Image 1 (cartoon, rainbow, N blue to C red):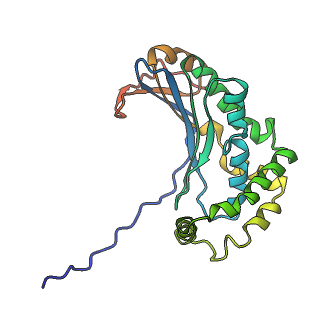
Image 2: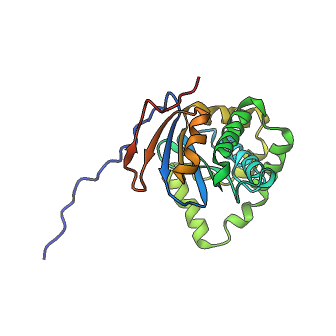
Image 3: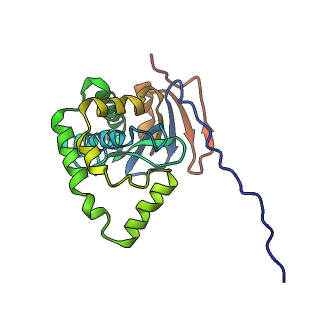
Length: 243
């Protein structure tokens, strides 16, 4: 009988990646697109730090729920999007921080301006308020019972503890740690995560209709990609850089 031989376990490359020194814009041409899809993001600190709950709370205020700033701006106030949000995707190394918004084509440039304004705003131009913090604290605590309604959900939380090397009792005191969050801690979390001047922008839309407006913004060098991510045009002579 043949037996499998033990092999070497591959190691993941979880190297630290530096933030960009300046923004970059990737425009993916989709002729005839009825809307543009905007992504803006960069890497954020890894999961497992003492700031985790503060970071989660900050992101919920910024764009992690329907009543968050990003959605209330682009959807409820401007009516340019059916829904806009921000997210921090868990990873063992640095995590992606992303702002995401599908918007009507003729408001692509304007929507990018509003996304950047919200990111700058939470850093100081429009700081988090006690009212916002209290509302999100209630949300995070009151929704906890519903998070473990199924065996699958419970297993998911156990996997989360193992994957990110959290304390076995991590969720036991979760509600108390949320309630104890201060405004200073949540504001500091924004400072730790958000870097508007290092954003990588990806815009999927009708190039003919949106390119000139995006160039007017001066958000960074613009690279044109096809649907497979191949560089169609990287024209430094036409790119616009921030002042």
